[in-house]
Amino acid sequence: MGKNERGAAQLSSIISLLAIVALAWAAWNVGPVYYDHYDFADKVNEICRTPKYKANTDEKVMDMVMKEVRERRLDPYIGKGNIAVSTTDTSRRITITYEREAKVLPGWDRTFEFTINADQPLV
Image (tube, rainbow, N blue to C red; front, top):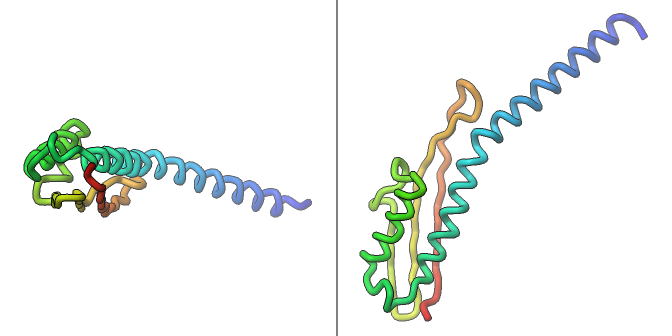
């Protein structure tokens, strides 16, 4: 094996290492954004199942959702204007759309768009 072949292997290893580090950095920055979204979506589904007698108006349901938004520190991204609550005799629907910006890599910010559609029967 000549000197040029060993140098190419070292360069390839360095590039691979940099790619792995960049992917780990991006996952570290973007992972919490997705985790927060899916965790919040689970809570919205739980709120959506709240019995009609406990939350008898859409405004009370909206207040329950906004309380969770504040507790999870999502209020910079989600306001009452992002939330729609609709209750019928047999079901409740909560729809939330929002955007959240995150730094993927140094110098690269990305806006993530999320939608939560919770539709649960009322018992």
